[in-house]
Amino acid sequence: MKLRFEAEKDFGSFRFEAATEVEGRTIGIFGQSGSGKSTLVHLVAGLLQPDRGEIFLDGDCLFSSSRGVNLSPRKRRVGLVFQHAALFPHLSVRSNLLYGYRRTKSEHRRIDPGLLIDALGLGGLMQRGVGTLSGGEKQRVALGRAVLANPRLLLMDEPLSALDDTLRFQIIPYLKRVSEEFAVPALFISHSVIEMQLLADRVLTIHGGTVTGECSPDALARSAMAENRRGYTNLLQLSGASPENGLFRYRWGENCLQISDGRNGGSALYELSSRDIILFRNHPEAISARNLLECRVAERFAADHRVGVVLESGGRRLVAEIVRDAAEELGVREGATVFAAIKASSFRRLL
Amino acid sequence: MQLTPEDIQAIRLSLQVGIVATACSLVPGFAVAWVLAFREFRGKALLEVLVSLPLTLPPVVIGFLLLLLLGRNGWAAPLLNTLGIQLIFTWKAAVIASATVGFPLLVRSIRLGMESIDPSLIQAAQTLGAPWHDRLLTVVLPLSMRGILAGSSLMFARSLGEFGATIIVAGNIPGLTQTIPLAIYDYAASPASTSMALSLCLVSVAISVVVLFLHENLASRLAGRRQR
Image 1 (spheres, each protein chain N blue to C red):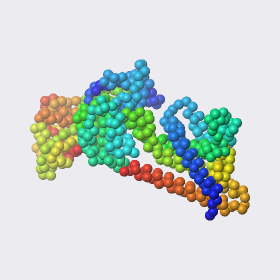
Image 2 (cartoon, rainbow over the protein chains, first blue to last red; image 1 turned 45 degrees about the vertical axis):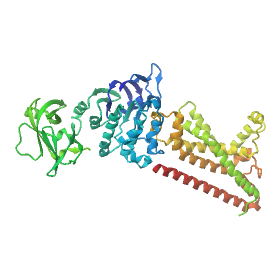
Image 3 (cartoon, helix red, strand yellow; image 1 turned 120 degrees about the vertical axis):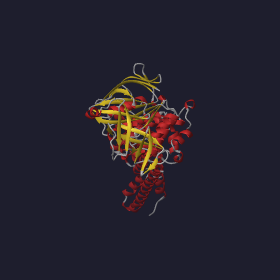
Image 4 (cartoon, rainbow over the protein chains, first blue to last red; image 1 turned 60 degrees about the vertical axis):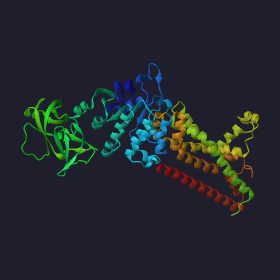
């Protein structure tokens, strides 16, 4: 998917003026509330009309003020998943899901409803009315409904922000699976760095109504490290736990991790704040933290007055965060060996 | 309680006028409500005033204006005469009077119902490929059902009570154009017929109660269907 975008829209008190060109499968649009993320989505979907500019999707002109082109939303074949699902309250789950599919020309019908319904785990809900669904189920139906219209681009306007943390991380695998298995390119809007890390290939940052840059999700997480209360969020996908003394033991590179909030069998996703890692230059003899990992410093980067230290062990990486003075005292440089201490309870299981 | 054959005819006529006036107004009422709720255009304020005008005008004024329009020598007389249509002093004139007076109530209720629809539902239908008439039928119409129902009940009830405009354009001809309020008016004019007037009043109350119950019942059934 390739999106070229150059548009101006004046709302009086707020002015949106953005020009960008992005290419990729899942593009994240990151910005705080009021930065213009939703405006961008509405402009691409055709629900708002720019005052001036051009919008091209895969070479097709959706809008151009100079050529006088303005495709109606229904002709753009751009799907939209709303923040609050926006399911039709008078229709069943099945009718909601098939609303767009039934209105899609047969030559554009590429996605099989049965397969998608299975992938989203909605099989058992088909005859239900949407009033009885939980927040997570609603959002899955909304996602299915948009995808079944076989859009060329799926716009997701903060689809997870109305859900609590547990539900949020339960939905993310569905989003990933749909985008990967059914090859639907997506523009994913969020103000959460973790969601960007988990879902996006590339990230566009937006601030005060303009696109301020493009970066990788990791670069976004690094730059947000200093401002974020939890620092840089390390995401660890771990599997094959073995219980040991009330903790769960996972293999991680050349080391082992001991985690309190573990899970037997299957894989689990953990978050670990860069601020919960303590670095030692030499092996401390005895320590209460259950994890003491011998790592190589792969990279260091600066964020404000702090230093991010990328630790590596057997091909796996973690980012620790220390203040600049500590970095000097420890002699942290690329290639150096350090010991990282992490409490077993510092890992938070997301899924 | 006793009812003469004329009374029964008046009751039948009242119901007939109410039902026909409401049924005929539904489609235009829905269309005008849709235009007022969803469209922006020049002269919208004028249309709003025009639609609401019968609500504030005395019904007698409306009746008189209708008489000027539809009467034997009225503004629309050439057209009506060519088509061979006689309206004044028939039950059809009573329908027109009721429809004119009740129309603003119908439009207001439907419009309120439409304006309470979450705009993102309509946007969702749009991005899912539904053209405007499709959205109108599959999203707007079902979601404004409560407004339509409320508006219809209100309009029907208003028709039952319609007096001022009806007496001018339809007259008060027993068995032909005499509705319940007109019959009561006749009875009330002579002191001997108080009990007859009272009987018709009771019938009036009974019909209103049934309409209100029916409305509540349908509305709660509609609400219940959403919860499934």
